Image 1 (cartoon, rainbow, N blue to C red):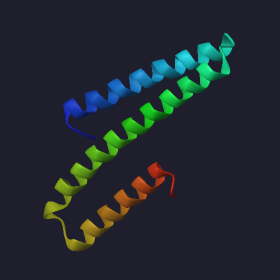
Image 2: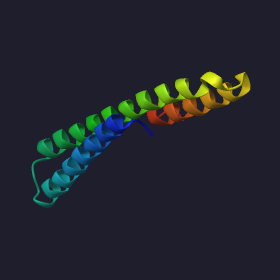
Image 3: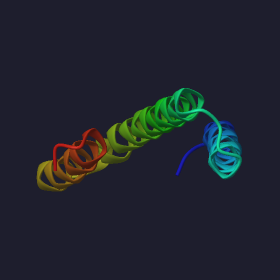
Image 4: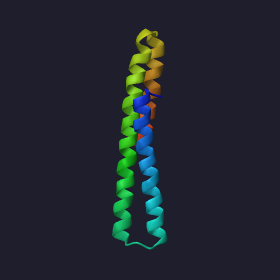
Length: 93
């Protein structure tokens, strides 16, 4: 997927998110206030978006670098695949 440093960054973000979700689960089990639960849900969503943006940035760099030596048709195909992935991430597809 990415360089070692980039991969570590994404994995660290995902581990934090995993912890946030476990905390959210505990809050619901313990019947925490709705306001506190919703605040935590918002934090998890924001963290997921940031992880997604990081992954998109990494993939974009890889796509651009990977297609340098490819034919125009292959570059177009790679770009189309990338655009579709971004559309899914943005909720447009």
